[in-house]
Image (tube, rainbow, N blue to C red; front, side):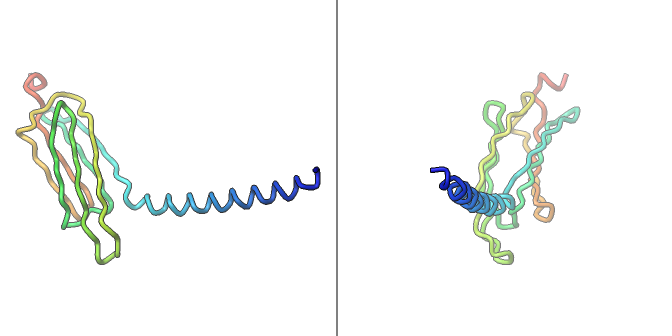
Length: 127
């Protein structure tokens, strides 16, 4: 049975190599759509910046705050120039302090592919 070992090891490495290449291919497909989130505080507000690589001017978004959590969901629409299909996303950002959702301001920068959400700090934080 010792003669099977070299054959088995070479087959194992070959199969693992194919699996590795497939995982690498899938990883590259996912990377263009990877979002990043930054949350900062100023003396009067909480600022959340979300980089969405596939964002384009035909975006659709729902941004809301519930129980001190910022919910962002949306769709980027189809990018005909780069022939990318629609990318849908949902993000939940836990805010570091209470905020006033009624004063929320959202800004979208299609060139930077960034959504900025500004939330005034809650009354207890403004003291």
